[in-house]
Image (cartoon, rainbow, N blue to C red; front, side, top):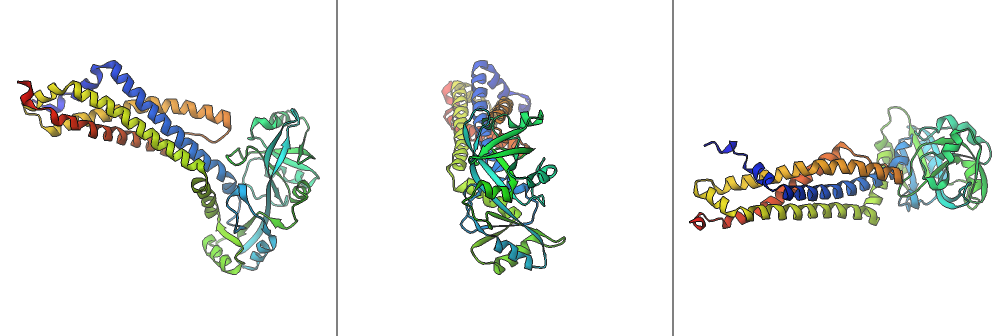
Length: 385
């Protein structure tokens, strides 16, 4: 008899249709938990470094006491201009940023908004809509509005696209929206504005001119960013932190991953989803083994080994993992879209995440099967006589 041709694991699973449906629903639920937690965690990281990745430069200077974009400390722009003394430095670009209060011009409600102040002579953001609108920022009290900001700021983008003139109050100062760009909401800011450095200081009269938040450095072609950054660390005073662009991205990501409760909560939620799925699959497989203990004893009596029976249980676990993963993936895609539309956060399915959750699901089911299979040891062939 060819044992490999007996689809015992499949027959075991499909014999009780209701039990199979419950098992698949439980696995799908665990997968959805993992998908959502990992998705929100990745959206947290990605949304908070979109600004960093958009910077068109090689090296970034920030205050040594700065922790993240939402907790920046100012430093003198003289530190930035001192970097021009290195022959490998091509240009430097100061950036102001601060949170202000935006007054919805349609409802009168106020909401915090992140404002960037730059020199309009040079575009330092690789963002749609910035380059073509830079010249407009030379006018007094003009701003570019992030079209991906939350709706609580008002239908600014929609009405601007219709040709309407848009004006609003920022920190009780009347400003005119002269263009739109696209950056996107994040966990740190629901909306964004870009304006000139001169207009920025008008909005924030308590800010001192020359006390910047970010210093962007562009290097000459062929210069190595890591080498120049190391030179600047020994050349500039120790009150500034010199980072390559990638280090600046990692700096922000590390803050959200380790210094806030949000990153921990999402990671914990993923672990809980894994545990929930393991318990559900264990209960199903344990019940399956217990209900057919006499049959397993019979198989042992006619020559089937303990190892073969273990293989059958692990095959059942693998089938449950694959079958339960599919509805979990489909529902997660629908929930991602719902969350993305509701929050404007970049909650998307990625290939890496899909593979990660699939591997976790298989491991989850194998662990459950390995625990449940211990019940087979009590299947004594002598019990059937």
